Image (cartoon, rainbow, N blue to C red; front, side):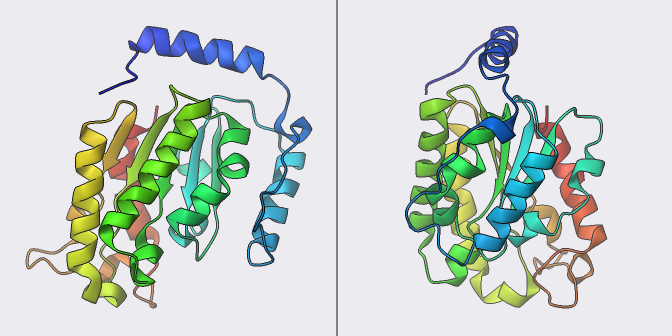
Length: 232
């Protein structure tokens, strides 16, 4: 295991990081990597406009990932006790997309905590659980190479009724990432999977929209309850 600082030292490190990178985000030059592509053009243009209109100080709490993050439109209000909360979800994305656009999605904001929900679409596209783990490890390594004391919280892949056929793979991917997180400093695993199952082990339909894939208000309330302990 590597990279563990006492919390006081951690706070001191972030104070230095913030002072060293005090320029508002809108002044930071971010170059879109190769493969930026038209698929994400609208989403990233929206991020750019929001960053220009609302520059955020470094050291905040950042939510990234697929549509389950994108549709959490009131996440800033849900965690209003925190000074800086940023939602950078882009629908349909996979973990590999989060890795590919890591500089724009994460490093540019220099957050103290990153919560990532991705891997769901990877499995639906036929990616093996072991490769979902590898993608997450690449994500973690990319963040910690530049921001070694940023805490990364993996929000477990949820059990959606529309993807019940993938439950065994979801369990396997979650278990692999949970084990990895337990052995890796500044990485945590937030288990939303378990409380989203009923007593028979089936996805709880009342937590989802009519599409049986995306969360409704009740589903996000459950997520907030689970995630709150990791957000500081």
